[in-house]
Image (spheres, rainbow over the protein chains, first blue to last red):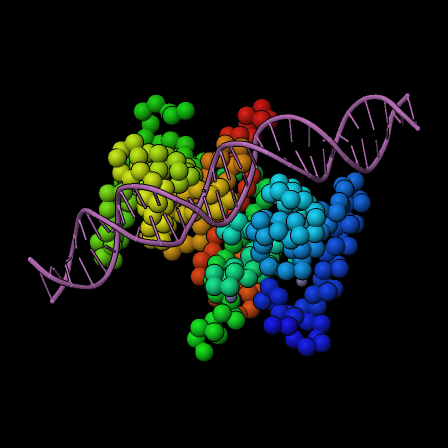
Length: 167
Length: 167
DNA sequence: GTCGTATGTGTTATGTTATAACACATCAAG
DNA sequence: CTTGATGTGTTATAACATAACACATACGAC
Ligand SMILES: [Zn+2]
Ligand SMILES: [Zn+2]
Ligand SMILES: [Zn+2]
Ligand SMILES: [Zn+2]
């Protein structure tokens, strides 16, 4: 699955330097928490690391298993609390369609996330809809409605899975 | 809550002739099923009617209760099967964010639904993002990914609830 | 330092949403 | 009438999520 000594790996459908992306995300979170007076505790940090390592959508119970095996919380609430914190602060997103969570690929930046979810392999890529485009049409339909948060979920088939099926 | 003899009621944040909208939707479903050789059975029809009557997001178990009280299926699978059928055929949408279902307001038309979900009163309005707008940006981020279905969920506060809170 | 408050965690129990699996019913075509 | 496909009834259980309360820890005020 992984590719020799190349620091780039295919993750979330996109090749990138993952070690760097993990480090960046953790640092961004540390930074934000320090600035905002939030407590980036062991469980929270570890939960974020787990999401980043896997770099795919993980269920809360899946994250919990990992936390358990490291002695960081044994019951569902431990995982949900950590994940809720990460989501609330923009370090992760919740993918409703899968009842799962992913680390945000643009932490710190205010964005409308768009998730590409492969219904075959369950991998998830995060891309982003620039607030400029498309949104106006939605706002137009939203008379009097104040939009606070918005997300896009696209379901389909990733490049890898298409190859496997139609070779 | 309802407004005298006026055939228009505020539903899904938008005033409209609801009796007509229900009739239209049912007829569209009958039509589509006849054409496609699908069986628009009692449970399925009733489930759609229930969604249309309420015209709001309803959980599967909520729909089930209504079906039960009419002797149309007593267990969860009955509701889930009917709802899955409606979703699969475009008569209803599933709102992931709420684990709930709503009747589609544009049955028959191929569209990217956008849901405005009031986090206060839980009402849901369906509007639509024209496939033309905004989507290109997402497709651009989706190298090799074949999008099959897509939806937009916006969370916020509806006009009514804003008034109540900031009078 | 210690006190008090706010915030985070541990733990138990329970609620909510969803599906697997298999028997039986219904329907439409041959 | 037979047959195969599709839909339904029923039981049981899986998967996801939160309420509630006791305890611990962090942190500023005094
Ligand atoms: Zn990465
Ligand atoms: Zn795939
Ligand atoms: Zn209506
Ligand atoms: Zn509202």
